Image 1: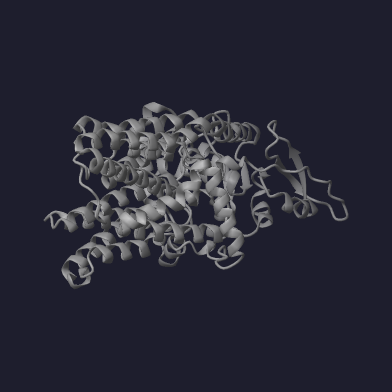
Image 2: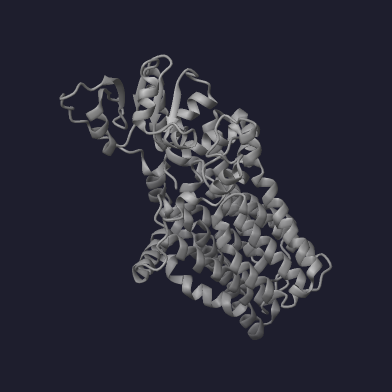
Length: 539
């Protein structure tokens, strides 16, 4: 086989039915959706999960870098999925749908490259059964959209390569489509920037003289820029319209770039520290995610590099750059940054299985003739497909038990308790993890509109000053409650008399500010504060 992808019939002349070709991605997608649904968070989450359950239905703006693609899609999905239940569940269901799309597109990708439906279906199922993608499909988060869009970008780029090498007149349209997909990805997550070097190398490898086609290159660049700009305009427009929940001040020039460039996170990268340790961690992570199949990844890459060098160049660059960045980043739950690497290595395994089946069929064809080669190649492909997916399927019950969020009602229970507990017209000085489920209830569901949730971000954007400043500005006219970090409580109790209201779930107590602490009075020792479950936390 040459370095170019095969056509739909495959190199050995296979001609599966149209129903099978169309049905395999759909069936795999259905299985992926069912897996995600079985482990799904039933309602609200803390931290970024809570934010991504409230911002899209309100069509507000999210934290840096804004995520306008996800917010826009989430707004549409929330409307379309209204019969499914409350907004939090709808946004969780969107992640399951996106995981299903990623799994189905993986089937299409591997089928493009091998012509083998069996190994393609196995690759799609393996993606859905791998712990990180499976877990991410169970709660609201834009990383599942990043995964689905990356799979779509691979399908479109491989489609362009196939048509470009065959000198088809429609080839250029596929690269323009790839530019549009990449623009949507830039509007979703800045991890997309890490894919640019691989795309550039791939495009130049497929068409070395493309830079001489200036009008066409300009068209692709224009489509990419127009798509990205159109999406990011959501931030200043919705902020200027007074959306109920806006992060930062994206309706100002400085505020827009502060959010879009994620300046608050720029100090969280350690690019050259402990490289050997990082490599060891990556190997261990691969074993945890793929089990025994992980041992075949290096060999699979070699097979792909020999037979499909341009695809190997594209995906190998993506893998190296993304893993380096994820291993170097130190902010919050970075496991989800490995979604794209998981997709890449699973695609390698599927493609390598198809190429090995082709080699076996070719060998048998030389020995016994083509009639014997066709069923023999299909048999080898089926055996390899089963080898890929059966270990993950066997581990599925254990994986499910680790990632299952079906009984996690902590955010829903806690936020409901808070709003049942606080007095009328209360001010709540909170921090991010606990602010987001409170915003969900007050801003989206309309519960307790008299309560004002003042997050640390609000104090910064609205120039409200310190926690003490907010207390002083409101205590004379409104009851004030605190939801604070454990490390802050001692200092706050040194200045204020606080009444501790312990929640029945052992998560996060409320502190009601009674008044200023008299001079010389000692502060009582504050109880410990638990953090929300890590399974629903995000970067």
